[in-house]
Each structure stands twice: as C-alpha cells, then as structure tokens.
Image: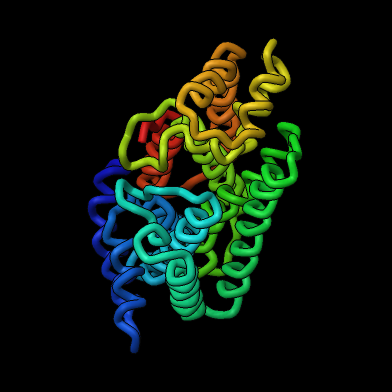
Length: 315
C-alpha cells in the first residue's frame, strides 16, 4: 500500500471523527467549523499519527481520535493564520474571516482548538501535556514570523530555520511521535526529528509555491510579497542578489501591485534563491531520513512516499 492508498483508506475515518466532535448547543458556530473541514485537505498530519502508532505495535483504530485532534489543531492554526495574514482564500474558497468577519472567525478557531484538546485529553495527561507544548511551539514560531515583518527585522537563515521548525515542524514532529506515545509511552527522537524536518521542508515548499505556483488550492499567489514574509528565498536573495536593496524596498511597501510582486520574484529567481531553497529543503529531509530506523515495512514505505511528496510537491 502506498501513501495515497493509505490516505484514501483512512481519510474518511479521520473526517468522521473530526466532524463528530464539531457539535454543540449553538449550531451556527459548529456549521462554520464543519464547513472549513469539509473543504478538503490531504490529512497528512493525522495519518502521521496513525503511522506512529503502527510503528509502535499498535493499531490505527486505537488512535483515530488522536489523529483527529491533530487535524483540528492544524485547522485552528490555519483559521487564525488566515486572519493574521489578511488572506483571501483557503483551499479555493474564501477564508472564514472573509465570509463571516474577524470576530466570528476568531471564535470559530478557538472552538476548533477546544475540541482538539478535548479529543487529545482522552489519551491521558502525558498526551495532553505534549499537545500543549506543541501548541506553544507553533504560536512561538508564528510570533517570530509576524514580528519580523511588522518590526522590519531581517533574520538570518539560521533564525528562519528555528522559526519554521516551531511554526510548521513542531506539529509534524508531534504527529509522528504522539501515536507511539499513546500506544506504549515510548518516544522515538529520530522519528520526531524526521517529522520536524518534513515540516520545515513543507513550509519552504509552501513559500516557493506561493511565488511560482498556479493551483487554486493554494493561498493567494504572490501574497507573501504583500505580507513582506521573511521566507528562505527572501533571506537568501538579500544576501546574494545584486539588487537586494530593491527587493527590500518592495517588501517594505507591502505592495499589491502585480508588476512589483513580479519584479521581487524575478530578483529572487536571478539570485538563485528559489533553487537554493528547494535544495536545502531536500537536504534537510534526506539527512534526517537517513537517521531513522523503522521496523514496520509498510510504515517505512509510506513515510518514504511522504518524504518524496513533501520535497517534490506542486500543490
């Protein structure tokens, strides 16, 4: 069974658990959250929970609710991230704050997080603690990502990787390790490190696709320039581009002008920043994969597929 067959098998089960918990006494609230979930998504993170459990000798069915909690935590971060980034689209449809306004979207995100924690808590205090620690890391990473743009700070590559490991890597690392922790309370640090590297690579690829992608399932193409995001491509281009000051001036404007956005992207391309970022993402994942020992052959095969998908993805 390959990655996509595994996803097809377990995605409906994950979605069933997610939608089952998005209910309460105020239907209008839960309709918003359910709408967001029904838009789709690959469900990579909850599948990683299932794989972690299987590698530890458990059954996927034992951790379906835990997988659903990770998907809900991810959904919570997306809802709030869209607000913080003033995004227009998520998965090809208007963001919740564009449909219902910022106050109701924030409230919906809070509700999703509450349900995520509720599900995770069913697996005991150790899982609840780790769930909270992971959430703290995510919001720490988001804090850095925001204040760098807001306060006109230009981070180094090392600082960027630190931020991204928290913002995106922490959740994927937790997804791979929580399944095992729930089954036998054993922690595989190299497996978690691999998950974290996947998260960093996923974010780098996400930033690349924001500049050169075409899929309607992505956030607004070129929006990272308007948001003045300190992506790896920006950091690398500012170090090596001949006209780095021009790139910096465009980012400072937070422009929506298509010509200026295109100019900024071309500066990064000419400096080799896009190619460099893609290579770095692949190197990070390849190095961490080489340190992981996986006993379950199917888990190893599926994670290998996932590795290849993350470093080569186009959507």
